[in-house]
Length: 362
Image 1: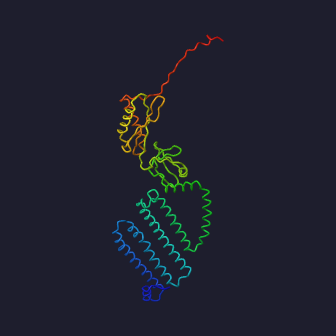
Image 2: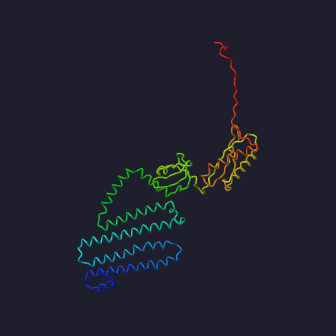
Image 3: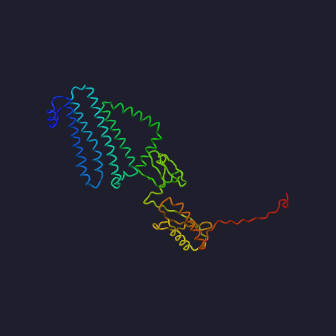
């Protein structure tokens, strides 16, 4: 094997003893590894400190170990080749062990690099809209699966293990597992699509097809957990959510939600006066926002009342119940103070006196 000139010079000085030459190669590899480490920790880190981002600092820190170990492993490989008295089978075994160590070190670096890239992408949501705080965990899992699968593949190659047979066996096993756990896989894929598509996020208030309404507390790969207003946790399989219509009360251009209060007034009242009273009540309620402004609409002429609807916006859906309760109280008191009558259904009952049966005859 052709050696570098500087290494060949060292070997010529050492002599012809294979063990001495191997030791010299290992020593030279350690010196080169320390020089490279000094360059990374010194010059490159000083340059990285002048940049605004910390990505390059973390990348250099992550490169320290794999580069140092790789240089030492290359030196160990050259030293092992230099010793011609070692049996061939033992040389092959030791070389495969060196390859395995190098593979594990660089696989760990690949995981760290993927994590760093996801962190940077999640901090620049405008440039990378797919990667955000909801999908970072998903992409992290995908990166780990890819790195782990690649490491296993190259590990098999380094040990001269036939990969085709293993892939065929894995395909058969995967098919059997797929049939046995089809519901679990359906939930898993639905969870991936939910995290990627983001129809809702943690903290949103959603309403299911079945009527449950609650705050999203957890979005997992298999289930989504809601906390209802009764403080009851509802766990919904993601496959069910993926095939249902979900109403997200916190979605849209903002998290504000409109509340509706329906009230009827008696015929003959001044409708403009009713309108002013309802608007004043809405504007005085502290949780009803000023923009968009509240409004009053006449909805129908009922049997005994003119039906109005007071519309107002609140900051968060969680306030809806409390705000409606307060508005009902304020409207009732305001109508009572202003002399506005809230009618209620009335029925006239007529009792007819009928003659007794014995007076009618047979």
